[in-house]
Length: 392
Image (cartoon, rainbow, N blue to C red):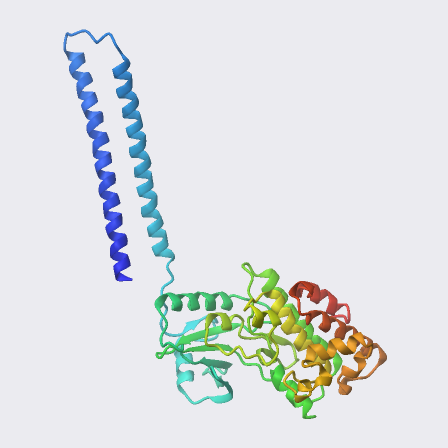
């Protein structure tokens, strides 16, 4: 980096010296012409009969003056551009970076240094619940350092810029980033609002163990909230933001079972972040590593399938030939055979009107789970499709 800066500085010095030589030459030539005209005017000799040489000198002076002005303007523009780029360069912030007025840096540092309640862990880090001195309950996600150690400053700046962008997102179905802290070893601690109900994965696990009853209306509300969060990221953010790791563990539920998408974009920011989504990733992500908003529609289709069937995509049932090998293939097969009712979670079968809504939702899930991205609806279209099933 230092060598590059020295090279740029050397080139800028050479350009500046060249411009000075050209400006001096133009000034010297114009002064000489002026001196020659003055001498001829004072002398009693008559002017030469031919004015062609004089006209050439005037034109040459004008051309050189214009060239000097252009080069001067170019030099000025380069100086201004360099100054603006220097001002726009994102400084690396140290210590806690706070986005909420309810959190103070000192209070946060004290809370992070104390022993906190462990909520869960993954290959990339751990999740904690902690209480600040002012009584505010927060959730802290501590990410492990990069595989290659502390990243370069340019990578750190990119991560910082992306985190600041995500902190500016405001939607009821998104988890808001309240603060982050850069750890000395290269890791990150991300601070979010604490959501007491846990993730959709936790809730569905309790449903399968008969510890919780979750009716169709609540499940449909969860599905609508998830797709509304995607709609905001895909259509209302400029530039478009992709989640990159949509799955039930990243769908948090508040006390009213209102969903909030967590970890938006983290899989893009941190290359070593776990992307093993247990069957929630679209086929094109494995075939050609291509990821688009339609890939997230596929992941949503899997989540909708889980809400409808109550089954986890990693269930041993989907390794049997009768299931077709996946939740999506199973739903598609039953839909084509006119037996979609057999896929529904029996614990939510109730009134006839609700059953009709669930069967329509199976059709929507099957379309979302198409192998071809172009055949899947957009998140914007999905909002209209799902809200037509029930009034929200």
